[in-house]
Length: 454
Image (cartoon, rainbow, N blue to C red; front, side, top):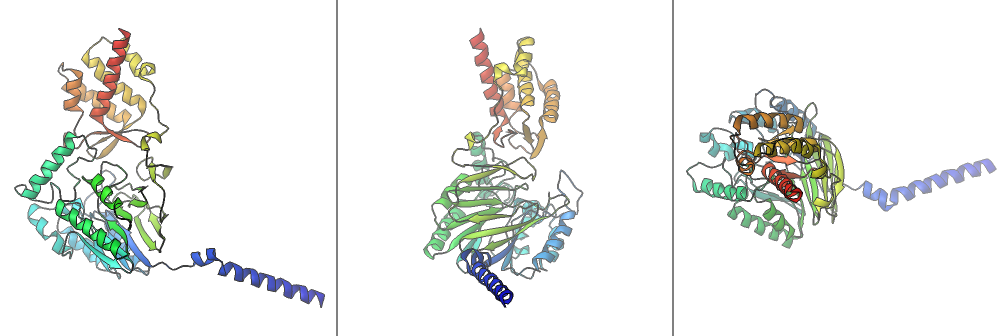
């Protein structure tokens, strides 16, 4: 009898414990159903071409087919692709859209820059081929408003060269280049004045209606990066004036990125085209106070919460895991990377052993940057210092004609010869700087040191 009582008491205890756990707020939160579930994918960039510089064009088709199969097993409210659906030929749309049309959920397109890599005659047909009535638009699901931007609105590749739009973009880019903006590249684009005003009015309308907003675009705007939208700073400022904006989600930078600034999440989704043997896509589960990102392949999982503090993720490079999270208010103070003082460097020691000349100054700069173990970004490709310095020395030998070091740097260390993009230095802390400016700063320090010694 006593044993039976004890058994019944133990069973009652476990029943009460189970009921407490199941009815607790934590348990209820974990069982909460999302308001919306959406599939997200970026930079498929399909073309029947051979692999080039990590871009596996042909493999993208098979990866996308698998992604569509997975999305169709999920109960999704919609799917959105963040731009660069194809590359090169207009006919490639037929192949990739044949897969796209198998999606069971409603599906939306964002226009990327590679959409316009087709022949000039085909460019006016792109929106119709994708079933888009407008290049930028918005739609809502319940209490959420989704805003789709067209970052090609202000660009050199989306408009005829004799058009007012082309001239406007050309002038805009030239002004950026004068200011040495790191994103002043011809393969980026911007949001034009008319679309900008539409964005302002759309966000104001959403806030007035009590809706929360997620903005989709192909181009990033934050954190600062060479792939960012031309008018990234202006877009960020505009988003910050509307309290209902929750997140900005984009592609374009295939390696992905993430930051939070003034409570707004900025998420760059990794690209399929450079995902290697893996894949890259995500399911966003949207709750009233958070968004759970279930990442697959190269896309990491994470939770985006309301009222999050300012952070920037720094990465080692090409899809590596996050190294550290830093406050966004003073990014320059985050990195532990410190240069060896110039006068203590091996590069300066070698310089003092050479005959004093303008050429010796240029050789010093190459020695200096090689010792820093920086990455040089040239024509959108990253080169380690041992490779880039070797090439730079050959270039110097061939193209130096007794010029002043400053003048030579201004001519030869500013823009890549092929695409015309600004040549960048990426330091070990993840920050970037124009190579020309980096060289000139080091050269100024060298000359000041030499004056102090004399």
